[in-house]
Image (cartoon, rainbow, N blue to C red; front, side):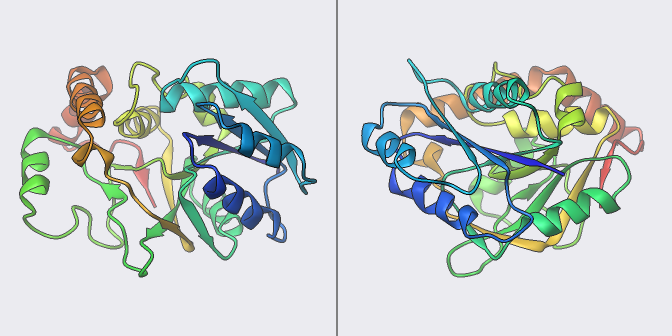
Length: 262
């Protein structure tokens, strides 16, 4: 069962090379194709990637102008189809570091959860502390609570999240295609929330792979850069106006089971 990985670089350079080398060093199962999108000019990285032999089909694309998160991965998904698509499509951030081989556990999770549309690993920081990659439906009240730092993680370990972040997702091609991929109107932020909600509303489940662990050095750029903060606010406003957010919230309010996780 083939896997294609999509990685988007925004000037990440050596970080991308390190991640690719980790994937190259994996034993089976490992990706059969890796699509690297350079969202800004990186001639040194491009030359270095093209000058090496990889144990997978490395496809390098260079954007004429920067695109949003969802747009880049949607285009990689389409490019994978043009080249003979694999059944599994992974969205992986360039700042991910692997701890062992996550793909076996991710594939097993997809195979064990009925109608699973995506599987995701456990994310930890460099010190091994679990990250808050599993979340509940974003509401103004929950965001204020998070900002003020009240309470622990939104979703206790082992409980069911409403959505998971897109730092590392292994998607079933059929599921991703059915919902139309990422909504490209989200330039950055909340596209992962929207995708998970639409998958669940369409009946697909989110499968947690407890045996897969990756290190994610989350940047939290919206807390440090005004441009990212602006994108974050606009994305939240778009999410709260979206049909998927309102339908999911209404289903919860009525006590309905909307998709699910396992």
